[in-house]
Image (cartoon, rainbow, N blue to C red):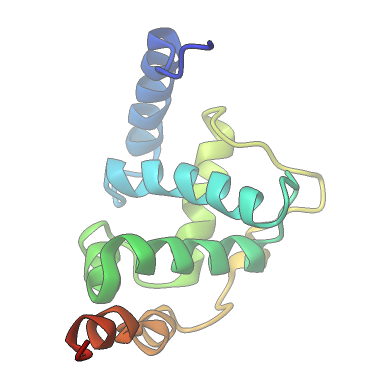
Amino acid sequence: MADASPDPREMIKQHIALRAAVEKNPRYHVDAYRFICEAVEYTCTKLGGRRDVSGRELLEGICELALSRFGYLARIVFEHWGITRTDDFGEMVFILVEVGLLGKSPRDSMADFHEVFGLREALDERYQIDLGEAQQEEAPE
């Protein structure tokens, strides 16, 4: 049976690269850069393992993951991390490419992230409370 624990060398390598990303642009919190890496994995998995995703696809995946992880507070978490627009994600993605944590194709560009949608509206409007479980718990037997 394979050991599922992360390789300590890979963890150190990622930690050093994330610190390098923060040094390149300290406007964004280290957790924001880490979240982008997780969102890339989430989006690739959601798209059937495809490794080359568009800026818009990644932005959609970022919003979905943020809403599932942070719920209604997703926008506030992003603002705390220094993120207020889709362009911010593009800046972080390309910094993560520079430090070696992400790859890119020749057709990828910062323009892929420029004003794709209003982040505030996208997060606030997409948030939904699932009442299904609550209604099932309250249903008389």
